Length: 63
Image 1 (cartoon, rainbow, N blue to C red):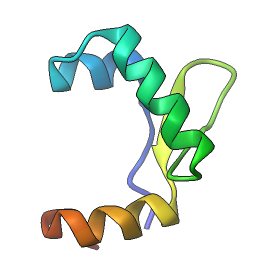
Image 2 (cartoon, rainbow, N blue to C red; image 1 turned 90 degrees about the vertical axis):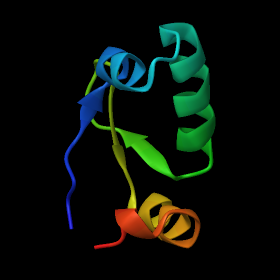
Image 3 (cartoon, one colour; image 1 turned 135 degrees about the vertical axis):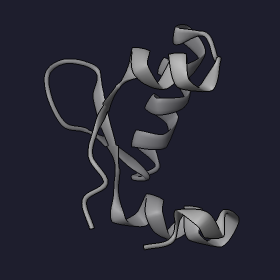
C-alpha cells in the first residue's frame, strides 16, 4: 500500500528534528533501501522493505 511521500522539511517539522539531521538520516535510509527519493526535490516515501522493517519495530505502522 502506498502511504504517500513527504518533503524532508515536513518530516523535520513533524518530528521536531533539525532539517540537517533528517537529511542525513534519510540519506542513510535511502542507501539501505528503506526509503526512496521520489522527485528531484527532497521528497521521500517509505519502501516496501522500510514498511517491513517498521512492522517489526512498530506494530501501529502495519497495513
